[in-house]
Every structure is written in C-alpha cells, then in structure tokens.
Length: 343
Image 1 (cartoon, rainbow, N blue to C red):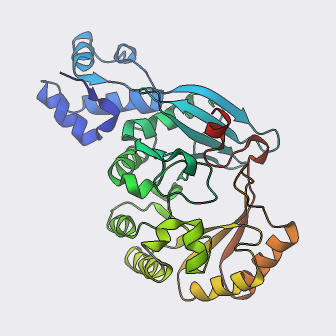
Image 2 (cartoon, rainbow, N blue to C red; image 1 turned 90 degrees about the vertical axis):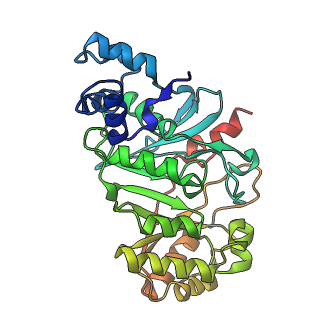
C-alpha cells in the first residue's frame, strides 16, 4: 500500500494514526517537533523514539522533501528567491525577505495559476496542480534550513498560485505553521493574499484563527481591473467590496488591499480619487507598490514623483495607505520570473 504523507496530517490526526498502530498519542508531539522544529528528513533521525516505533513510522509514512534548482540573492536588500523542485519534478518559487526586525517568507500555493493576471510572470505557465500541505511546509523547512542565522517571523501566501483556490491544503499548512510544537508562527503574522475569490473569503471569515487577509485590487475601475485581474469578470468590484465589508464586520479585523502602480494604466490622480471613493467606510489599509518590471509584459513602473503623488492623494482623502518598497528587483523577484529564466 502507498505510504501516507506524514506532513499532510494535523497533530490530532497524527495522534489518531499512532493510536491505530498501538502507540501512545503523546508521541505525535515528539514527531511534530522532529519534523518541524528540527527539520529531519528521515525517521531514523528521531533519536528519542525507540527503534520499534521508528520502524512502524517508516512502514506507514513518507517524509517529503524539495530540492533547490536555483537561487538568487539581491545585493541591495538581501532578498533571496529560490526555485524548488518537488518530488514529481514540478517547480515552484519561494522568497526570503529579510528586514531588521523580521524575516518574511513568501510562499507558493500552487504549481502555476488559473487566474492569468496580466502583469504576473506566472501567468504564461497556466495551472498544473495544487500544492499539498506538506509541499507548502517544505518551502518553509527548506528556507529555514538554509538561513539558520534568521528566525522566520512572518508568512505571506503571495507566491505562485491563488491560495483560496487551494483552500484546504493552505489552511492545513497554516494550522501547522501556527502550532506551538511545529513552527509556532503567530496567526496574525500569517497573510493570505487573494485576487478576489469571494467564496474563499467567506470561508476564511468563519475560521477560528486570526490570520490576515489581503486582496489584490489594482484598479478601482471594473473595465481596467478585468484586464489586469480577469477573475473580476466573475466577481466584479461591487461584489468584492461588499464581501470585504462583510469580512471586516464578521471578523472585526482590518483588510489589506494590494495595489501595484502601473504607468498609464492605474496610476493617475483620477485613479487615486476613484480608489478613495471606492474604499469609503471600509475598515482597510492600502499597500501601494510600484510595478516590478517583468520582461515581455509591456508594462512600466510610474516615476518616483507619480508614486508619491498617488500616495499623497489617497492620504489627503483619509485612506490608510502605506508605500511599500519593491524588493529584489536586481534578481527579478517578481512572482514567476525565476522560472521564466530557466525556460
């Protein structure tokens, strides 16, 4: 019989599996700590488990791992992008974002993506499959093992794929990331970013875990947003904003909007005024970021003054807005760019 992927199992689920093979449930905590705190790649490394139990584990379970095909480190800000090969030879990207007081990992949730956002380098690959929870956790384990001098403080699901299109696996991984016997990353330091999958947003609102939700907005105009983010045709702005209001009312949490500024597309003063009107009365903040140049996409970043003008216009209209620095531009850190370079 095929072996069970052990990192796809919650701690409670592992307790049940261990009881089923005649072991005490507390052993699950030991196994969790070996898998996630130590990062072992074999059951033989779990030295405080007796040999009989290790043999049982080997017979029933499998420990997945990923392999690095490439990596690039920014000389300007230390951002490091990894191209990782999964066990079926599919590839994904993960990014380490170091800062003075925190270290953020940007994770992929799918191999490829269905949603074809026009400014994203992942779009040409199309969709292949969802990542398993174990594969998402393997991204974290790999980067953790190769950056022992840094403590991972934050997780953002902003890599390749749409997290809410892989809801169950992403949430399973998040609960293990949050588990005190695994990574012990606070729920409020974990962010899911979505292009606007309303049913998934509604599900998150009902979860009993205080993760952050970020929505890729990118335009206050339905016609323009539909070109940039085609899912807007299914979930147009009025419906999306209504869902965001429902989310903030139900969870009592602020929602974040990501807005990539693209010259001649969504970065005019008129766009800023329209965005401020759209967000009136909504408990939110806006993260502005200048477009990270992607070859063959035909888009450009606005000038520095244009970005500042957009920021000032939103600020003057009472919008809670932050100006984020684009990281890793010297290593093509935009989502999907390292995979493109290997084609």
